[in-house]
Image (cartoon, rainbow, N blue to C red; front, side):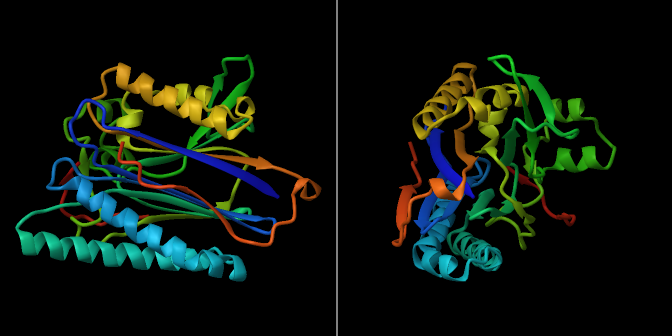
Amino acid sequence: MCKYYACAVTDAGQVAINQDSLLVKHAVSGDIECVMAIICDGMGGLDNGELASSEVIRAFDMWFNEKAEELFKGKSIREAETAWLDILTRENLKLRNYSAENGMEMGTTFTGIIILGEYLIIVHVGDSRIYHISNSISGSDICITSEKGSSAGIRQLTEDHTFVAREVKRGKMTSEEAKKDPRQSLLLQCVGASEEVRPQIIRGKAEPGTYLLCSDGFRHEMREREMADIFDPQFISDKEELGKRAQDAVATVKERGEKDNISLILIKCDKVSSENEGSKTEIMYNDHPNEKTCDLREGDLVRA
């Protein structure tokens, strides 16, 4: 059985408008928990990125409020996957129609995770990311020595839907070249500016550790080894500590001169024995709303 707690932090950085929108929903029914977390990064290179990101967030907020009880009754997370894909299709069309009617172009990335009990689904479009940080190291993880002398591993779960990521995957560019390439902000797809969105979908079981969702503005000035160190799950014992580390990490990125909006969501997953769980019958909600503080086809590139 899994126990979850979460936090969300966003900062405009060095720019006037925060185009990132965040949503965290946490519901409990009996001994089952459901956590939903989404980051949408509005496209700064297009018009009204903050409008696009907040519109998509509102749609998913409404869906959760209306459907959470049904999720618990059915206890099937695959229903959420179908619903999420439908919402993204509708929101993509809605934003495209609005843009056409008003002579503009707008778009947003979408990176979301929903966990029901011990199962999760990730749906992803764009270049925000989801990482999993764990003390169970596997060969594909980046291994670090943590601040207190033990090791943590970090694994990137999502793929960047960017021009440079595609070129690296094709062997036409190295990872180091991609970091310096002026085209690194070009997206292959985003919600609202693409004719069709084809999300990356990940299905699996939730694993103990820390799930990190972040916009590209957070990771520009924060190395993955640092992320694993800061969010090492063995040193995070409660929600307060989780929130403090999130705030400190965003402050560090800002101090390093990041000019983009800086956003992250953290979900801590702990394994607990069933006898430690109290008996609850009602559905209880914990909201962390928008704070405002897969194969890709060849298509038009969108500047983030």
